[in-house]
Length: 415
Image 1: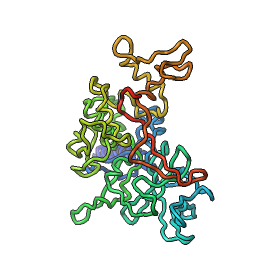
Image 2: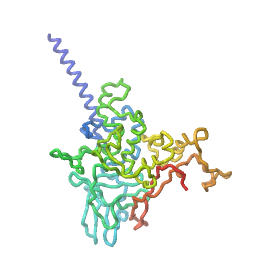
Image 3: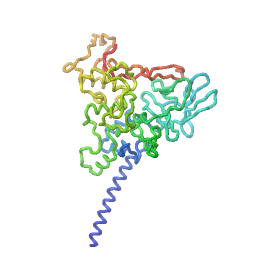
Image 4: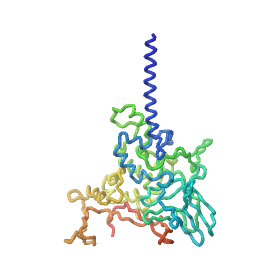
């Protein structure tokens, strides 16, 4: 009898150690301050693990993905994540007359401060950085549980401060509220505040924000997946996770279109869409899909792509050209090689531009150019956005206005 009791105690001890080990493993994987913290859950109650937990089994993919603009799309503000200069002479944006906003570094953090006639009349901290910095950044600040956009942003191509998108250049204002739909495309998770069974759609639980476009934005919350495979290391079939490779073409497109089809009319609460869902059940488009000419190059890559002949005459999806796990920005040769998967002499139409004997072409390209190395600049050129026009304020750029250039996803023959 005594031996039986000892065996029971021993088994209980082994079980306790096993569960403690699993718990500590998951806690370590989910406690990185720049990713997910313990207890972060989506609107359906599913727990996140944080992408650091993925590296145990998907190490190479993880190392590659954390270098992408998606992964770095939002972060808490710090001296490392804010790209604009705070040096004297390069840290101000002049409006008109004696009004300006100065970007200031203080012991308590980073601030945008408005001055009129040399006197401070409004200031707010830079709390959150939106944008990887590939094209630029904009900044948010907390006011209790609500987020607001700051008036000045950063423009990467000219390394200077500019007016924030959506703000005029008449005078600085600090009152543009950030709704949940904005965070839906710039974070992996955020939770709005509920009180007395009422949702406050522009008030957020700070402990539930998961910055950046993490692995779990597309593959779904991974806490249960990590726990299962930690306890079952011999299981090779992924459980409790979304395998995007098994989605239909439209499901894959919808997952990208959530954030790459322009602003949409919400039909259901933000963050309720999950990869594999039908997007039109969660939000509606604001444009006429049959009229691609009305689309601006800023923000609606899906609408532009779907209006292209290449798209309509094939089964291509976003993944046909983009490997989202790799930083491929600016590699036109790589993207052009993917064009050649269809546009080659044996399977499809090829480029009609004739290369001259000197290595140039009948369209005046530079000598020695290999057309197949750069289909992109001709057939998907960078075009000026008519919606995002930036006023610049920096040395040599004061008062200068520029259109934000965005590569169009309408594949066509351009003059």
